[in-house]
Image (tube, rainbow over all chains, first blue to last red; front, side):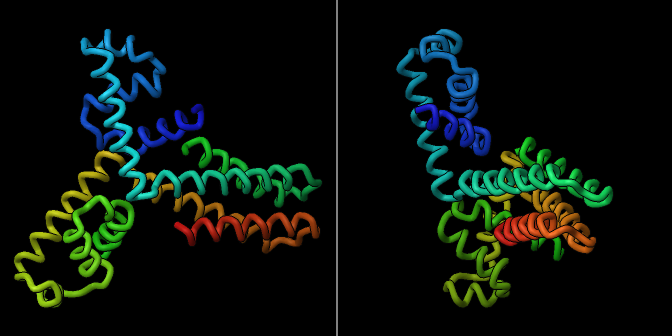
Length: 119
Length: 119
């Protein structure tokens, strides 16, 4: 379930702008702000069933886009590789290094960190 | 123009599956196979104008998706950073290195190369 939420947040981050405004807003409140259906219903002035329908349709649309393009999967694989490479630079920096080697190892570690953070 | 073609190929690679089958097929022949409008028209049994309309509409759709999601831009920035990091590993490998340092530098260079190739 928690994993589903992470995936749905990722899908929303990647493809949210392809949803209708209403679908995107509802999903942002539900997946990113973690509001309940009742809270969203009150905030948007629609029924809980209406909120749930919006979320369900939006998730179906997001999943269909991912099924067709596979971009979130591609991105997630890259992130995992970057994490492994970053761990290698940590290993490198734990060794006794000449000054010039140390400088490049730092550049690599910082560069990989910033790629991981940027996501 | 050549740059436009590269961009359009990238857009097609990322979002092509979101086009209609006809739009995608026409674009693949035009951008990836580099056929002329006349050749595509003959192959698909439609007019040159029909082919051009398909290409034009498809490019507009692809550009709209990119404008909304920015995923190709995000991907291109990552690729440029990976290229810079890979150049750093080459610099590292040109230095005299202890065996354990050399082994990690190789891992990093290979890992970055495979990320760049995978795209």
